[in-house]
Image (cartoon, one colour):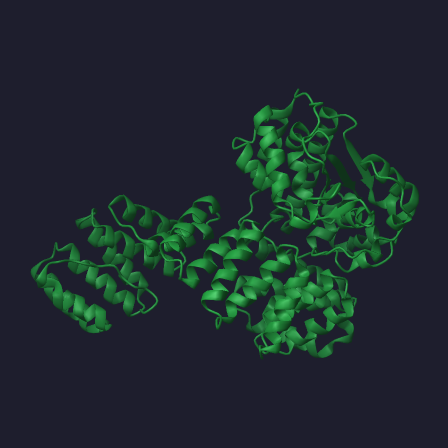
Length: 579
C-alpha cells in the first residue's frame, strides 16, 4: 500500500529478508514468509508487525490493524508498531484511534516530522486545532522544504479562521511546488475567505490564463465576483464551472441559489442525474439543497420542502451537532456574568469596534452595508478575531480581569485586517459574537453592539433553507434545534440587556425596510456617526460580501423578504408556530 510508509525497523540480521521484501513492495511474499515463521515463533511481535505491514500493502486494512494490535499485545513498548498502527487508522479516517496510537508512539520514544505531520492532521480532523497547529508547525519546521507540510499547516490555520497565517503557508507551498495546481486553488480560496476578493480573483484569472479549466477555479472566481458586486460576471463564471464534467455537487448548489432554475432545463436535468449517482453524504446534501431551489422555482413546494428536510438531516449527521452544548454555554454565560459591573474606563485605542450580532439571516449583512457607506466606517465582514482573541486572553472565558481585558482588546485590534487598523470605526458582523457581549463590554467599553431583530419565523425559515459553507451554525439543520436555539438566543440577549442597560442597540429588520431613513438615523446616532445620505443606499457600497446575503444586499432596501416563509406554511407551519 504505497500511501502508507511503515516504520518497522530492527538491527536483528535475522529479520533482514523481511525488511527487504517490505522495501521492495513484495507484500504477498512478505505475508507468506511471515505467516510461515509464525508457526515456529507464535509470540514474536515483529512477525505480527510484518504481517500487518504486508496486509496494509495489499490494501487489507482490517487484517493489518488486527495483526498490529496482536503485535502490541505482545510488545506494547515498540514505538514503531504504535506509529504504523496509527497510520492504518489514519488511512481508514479513524482519527480518534489514530491520535491515540501516535501519542503512544511518542510516549515510547518515536519522533520526527512524519509522526508530527500525521498526528497534526488527525487532530485537525477532530477539530483539536491548537494541538494540530503545534504538531504541523513542528513538522514544517523540521522539513521547511516540504510543500505538503506547508499546505496542511495552512489548511489548519484556514479551518481555525486564521486566514493571514493560512495565506502565508499556502504561498510557501506554492513557491515550493509551483506545478501543484491544488495549492494554487487553495491559496485563491483562502484569499477569498480572508476577505481579499480582489486577490482571489487575480489568482483565479492567472490559473485560467495558464490553461486551467478546473470547476473549482471557476467557482471561486464566481464567489469573488459576487462578493465584489459583479453579479453578471459571477453568473457566467458559475456557468463555466458547470461546463466541467467533474464539477462537484456544491457547484450546482451555488449555481442554483443565484439563478432562476425554471429557465435552466439542461442544468436541472444534470442535477437530477447526479442525484442518482451521488454516493457521499456531502454530495447528496448539496444536491438536495440544489433540488429544493429547483422545485421552488418550479412552484413545487411540497417536493422542495422534502428535499430541504433530507438535505438538512444529512448536514446535521455530518456535523454531529448537539444543541445541549449551546444551551449549556448560554446558561454558563448567564451564571458567570450575573451581577458583573460594566467598566467605565476608556478603551486604549483610537478604533471604535461596532459588533453587529444576532441570529444568522437576521439582517446583519444589510446593517453592515448601511454603516459601510459612511466615510468613517470600514466594514470587515464576519471575523473570527473575537473568538481567537478570547481564547488567547481569557482562557477560562470567565469575567476578564483588567489585565485580561486589556489583552483581549489589544489582541482583537491586532487581528483586524490591515486595511482596517487605521479606521475610526470598524464593523464586525459575525452573528455569533452575541455570545461574547459580556466579554466585549467588560474589555472594550467604547465598543458598540448592534443587535439585529427580525421576525423569528422569517429568521428560522431562512436558516433552514440555507446550506451554509462553514461548519458552524449546526443548529440550523433540524427544526426543533432551530426553535430551541432561537429561544435560547432571545433569552441570552434579554439577559445582556438587563446586565448592560443602554449599551445594546436593537435594530428591527422589519421597521428598517418599512421606513429606512428614521431607523438608519437612529443607528448612526447610536454608533456615534454624523449623518451622511449615502447610508440610505447600501446597495451602492463597494465592500466585499461573502455571506448568503451577497445577492440581496446589492439590491435597494426592499420589503417582503420576511414573508417568504408563508409560501411553506402548510409544510413548515407546525414547527414555526412554536416561535
